[in-house]
Length: 373
Image (cartoon, rainbow, N blue to C red; front, side, top):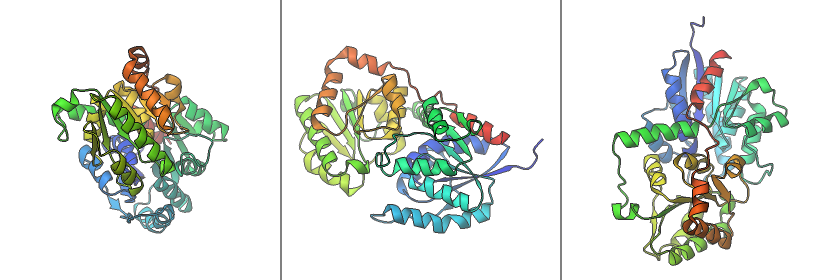
């Protein structure tokens, strides 16, 4: 019987990582087999703080690398310089990283340099196009090539890893921890009878199209086309409310506020915290998004999702029928939103499709494998 706790260091830097790793942190801290340390790189600062406050968790270390207009090179080099001191102090047996961020790749590389084992949560997602999504596709592949444990959310992710030569005994299909987080959030919201502080209930009782957009590959013409489509839809469907929490990146803010600030049924609001976003998702009729996480979360709430990207590393959602790729062509976006607003049968088919991303027990499965390792 193991009497010494296994030391794990969980490293994260962005809001999506914070959401998806929060349930794992909570479970690990309850598990007597582990000594848990959490390190924030600071790739995103305030957005991560909102998530930690909501889930009532704290970090042990914060590298605070965030800078205005930071580049991928700055993020990578800063983590490579700052994280080794934390690794030396904690001396973990395993470093846990998540998904596809620059934080994930840089932290995995630091772990490799210190000869520390790496556990990769949400491993195996692929588009097989190294520039789409950028830089996430390569971040995932490089992190995977370093990792010792691969926690694949689906069987397709498992097959991708096997195709790349990862030993099958180093992979476990867990489901996605974002579903764990969503269930935790729903319980918190329902138990506290949460209501939105942003909107009049009269707005929330109407049909809502919730919009999110932030991806680098959509900067420029992509966002101009998205905005054009949303404006045309708002003019056509006056009773539908288009709610858009606008990402802080200037490449997003400029076209959105220039094009979409003219119509009373378009609501441009600052980025919302996770609690508010889950609440808005639950109130929405359909979702327009270029987010990876939304493709996983929305099916658990029965919300059809139109994905404003040319590729997705989450084809399970497309196959299950919970999501559809529409790219950033304005006509394609307008056509598909119109179908879902007007065709009840098509809407029902998407909204009732089964979520392929899990049952809320991914964190427990991850810790079971790490405990045995």
